[in-house]
Amino acid sequence: MKQFFTNTLLEWNKNENTRSMPWKGEKDPYRIWLSEIILQQTRVEQGWAYYEKFILNYPTVKELAAAPEEAVFRLWQGLGYYARCKNMLAAARQIVSAYHGHFPNTYETIQSLKGIGPYTAAAIASFAFNLPHAVLDGNVFRVLSRFFDIDTPIDSTAGKKQFAELAQELLPHGLSASYNQSIMDFGAVVCKHQQPACHTCPLAGKCKAFQLGLTGLLPVKAKKLVIRKRYFYYLVLQYKDQVFIRKRTESDIWQNLHEFILIEAPAPEDVTALQSTAAFKNIMKDIRYNTDAVSGTFKQQLTHQTIYSQFLMLSVSKKPEMPGYMAVPRNQLDHYAFPKTITDFLGNRELTLF
Ligand code: SF4
Image (cartoon, rainbow, N blue to C red):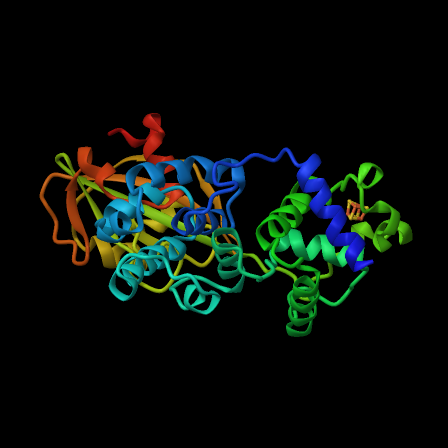
């Protein structure tokens, strides 16, 4: 059964796998790492362009390590999950300071880098150095749970251990790179999350989930995702050609990105009513302002949160004191990295009045 599974996947990879990606067959650990970090929680179609941008701007880990943080964040803008970007830069600097700019070449040292977990370490170790480490990502969990009919929750400690051991047992000697590539691609294009191609699948003859009609029930997850709703009201305060922004430094979403003056409300607010709240008065104090326009609601979906944002364009004729915020010429806003919801707003010419 296990031998059949491994051999069939390797055969499929050799003869039928047409999935193309710019980093496929890549042996440079820096490029593999970059692609893996970009692809965490990002679709391949979206990540592809970012990967190429990063390779073009920073062809080596030394160049990435030497780059100013703000420039790297701007290049990352739109990918979300900015902690990934922050960790990526920290790891690049770690490679330069601890390994003289040479990417480490053992599983343990790779995993010791900032932002690299067991999956990414196994991917780099196997793809770049052909080391015997099985990858375990969403695609692999899905294929294994279905073929072997395993209903242990994949997000439980027991499940992670069980799947990791099985994945490791299936790894063929000396063929880690091609086997890992096979199973990941197979999960992405054949044993898909929805509508797996069971009727043309080369594993179907021995696939337990297919035989028992369980494909729709596997893999099993223990925890249900709870999505929190948040309501952001941005005051786009303009004085002459300047607008007030600040960098988000709290350990919250969008850390290190910039934003306008924010009032977060616990529930949806009417914009007129918002202007008489204590939060608004606390910020605006006795500053005289005009309300020039109010945007519609922008929605940004994150993994655990939905952010609803609305923008109030206010103008003042006297430069106000705005502690914690800096006044930036509006034609220089593109020098700063913003969350997607704000770049969407800034891209909407009709609304911004800029
Ligand atoms: S038969 Fe269906 S469920 Fe089983 S491995 Fe193939 S695609 Fe996946």
